[in-house]
Structure formats: structure tokens, C-alpha cells
Amino acid sequence: MEKLALNKGTYEARTAKSRDMFQRAKKVEAAGVSYRNRYFEPYPFFVKESNGSTLTDIDGNTYTDYWCTHLAMILGHRHPAVLEAIKAQAEKGWHHGVAHELEVTHSEAIQRHVPTAELVRYASSGTEANLFAIRLARTFTKRPKIAKFEGGWHGPYDALHIANKPPFDMPPSGGLTKGSQQDTIVVPYNDLDGFMKRVAGEQLACVLLEPVLLAGGNIPADKEFLQGLRDYCDRTGALLMYDEVVTGFRLGLSGAQGRFGVKPDVTVLGKIIGGGLPIGAVCGREDIMERMDHTKYSGADYAYHGGTFSANALSLAAGLAAINVLEHVPVYEHIDRLGEMARSGLNQIFENASFPAQTTGIGSLFAIHFTNKKPLKDITGYASYDRARSKEMFRHMLEHGVLILLPEIMHGGISYAHTENDIEHLILTAEEYVKVNS
Ligand code: PMP
Image: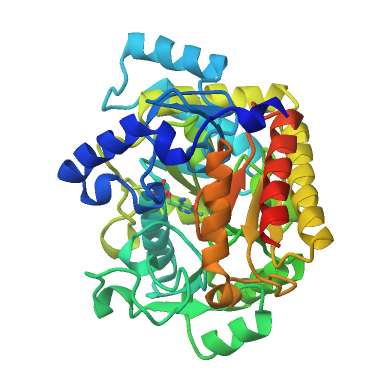
């Protein structure tokens, strides 16, 4: 494979400019980065430009990018249709601050595809959209308690920033007050009996889950589990809410709810619907969503929503262009095929060498886990993962021009710009690591 020899020398030897930049960065940003996920050892490379499936750093090295802008860039970097839309919109104004047509057209696109999206409202990030979704559920049901799953990641909003990885009883951050989390009930993923036990006697406003546990290891929910939650919500009046910030428009135009066939009441979207620019959205049943309508409701019956950058014109223009491509080009066929190729190719290598690792994922998503525990139905085995190996393999991949964040559980997303050649390179590079380290 020609790409195996692409970046010459060790990471440190060929990233002198990034190393210097990191020294500068540390003087102005905590840890030298703007998001902990973007830090890795010995120091992150700094990107000069991104294109298609690759990132090029300031030293001129190229990496095949399986991080894909936190999985937002489903068409690859700088897709021409999205680029054109951004340029054209910038000429007309990038954020008008009052109502405009793009928010109608973009909502219509969401309505067209997301089975339960009767009404839509925009935010600037997935975190923010989850915050508004929780507020909406509490307003609609007049109940404070919410259920959130072990290993689930919904962004760092206080009520949801709990138990995202083991140990679940350790706060993942300072500054989280008991008050902000006392109404959050942490429940086990893919375990309906365990869920029922923990919520026994509770009156829930909502059950919020990722239909594929993303940061928790790319682990899809079992269909029966989703159906069990649906039945529970129907019985008790709690709202079933899917966080489809990653799976929305990635597992197909109708996201995980289309793929798994179990519908939520409310859906949270982000990432792909902004074409790679900042966005979040809440959508769902009209009778629920209309609680955000201040012309109909007030006081405790009204769920406040808004924000300076909500329905940002550039994000909506980029998102619409991306959705338009997804509607007309066989993107899902391509990325799902490559996803299957990556997962099965990597699993084969691990199995052949009796190497204690395995992949998870669905469609164009994959993760690599350094454990023998099977099947992986949740993140609870995480405490026993071999972190040292994981970091070592992450480093090996980096040396060979493959970027798969995060070093602790390597997560990959495949874009339309990735090729079979890229996946072959990924598998061969992994094979080389396994051979040397078995
Ligand atoms: N929900 C899920 C499932 C996510 O993966 C993320 C981010 N990775 C978020 C919400 C938060 O989105 P954002 O980073 O845009 O705030």
C-alpha cells in the first residue's frame, strides 16, 4: 500500500511545527486545546487544511481522518456542494438575527425525513438542543425526573453530565451541584429489567437515550430494548426522547428511528444537519413541541427556547446542501459498505491473532475495544479495558497517517469521501500493529 509509507519518520520527528504550536497553544488555552477530546499524546498535530477524507497538518503530513469533525462531516471535508452553499449564503448575509426562509426550508427537509418531526426548533449545538429538549419534556409532563443511560453522552449540560463513563458514581467534572443532578435517574443500557428496577415508583418526564451509544462505544440499542422503553413510556406518560445528534442523517435520512423502526416522541439532532457548521435542533410531536409556542402558552406551561445564533443562516445553508446530496446521491450505500468492510476486516485480524480486541458499530460507525467481553451491550466493561494497548495502537495508527480519536476507545466514522483503499490501509495498518504486539 503506497499510503503506508506516506508520513516518514516518527510522529515527533515529522511534527516539529505542531510541537512548537502546541507550546504556544498551552500558553493561551487550557491543555493547549479547546476540547479535551482533541488532545492526545505526545501532543496533537495542528491542521493546516482539511479535504475529502484527509487532514493535512502544518508540517505537511497527511492523515486519513476517521474522526470526521466529531462525526459531523458525512460527505467529507470541503464537499463542493456544501462549499458553494456556504459561499453563496455568505454573500447574502451569514446571520440575519430575525426570521428567514432557510429555517423554513431546512425544517421542511427535517420533517420530510425524520418520522416524528412534526415541528422543529433550532439551537447552536447538540448540548444546547438537549437542554431545551429536557426543559420541554418537563414542561409538557409537569414532572421533574428524567432517565439517562449509563455511558450516554448528550453534551455537558449539568442535568445530563452524569455517568457517561465508569465509575458512574464519580462526578465527571467539578462544578456539578447535587441540585442540578438530583432529578436525573441513571439507568442501564440494553437492559430492560435493570431499567424497570431503577425507575420503579418514579414518575418520569422523559427517557432520553442515544439509539446507538456513541461516545459510550458505538453500541447499538437492541430493538426489543427500544420497544420495551416505548411501551414503558406509553404506559406511564413519560416522553421517549432520542438523542440522534450523531445517528440523525447518518444511519439513513430517517436516522436510527427509521432504521430500528421504534419511534420516539421527541428527537434531538445536530452535527450533520449543519453540514459541518454549528447546529442543534429539537423536533417532535406537535402537541409537545407547541409548548415552545409563546403565543399559545405562558408561565409554567411554556417551554422557553431561543438563542442569538439559533437558525444561523450559514449553518442552515450548509446543512441543506448536505441533505440535498444525501437525498440524491447513494451516500449511505457507500459509507455503510465501507463501515462493514472496516468492522469485519478488523475483527478478522483480531480473531486470527487471538488478539484481545473487537469492534462494535453500525452503518458507517465503528469503534475498537480492547477487551474480550462479548457481546458488548453497554459500557460497563470499560473499567477492564486495556488502556495501555489502546493508546499504543492509537499511536501506531497515527504514525501511519490514520487518525482515530479517542485513544481510550478508538471511534471511527466513515464519510462519502473515504475509499476502499482508505479502509484497506486502515486494516493493514491495524494488522501490522497486531502482528508486532501479539
Ligand atoms: N449528543 C450526542 C449523542 C453527541 O455525540 C454529542 C457530541 N459528540 C452531543 C450530543 C453534543 O453535541 P455538541 O458537541 O454539538 O454540543
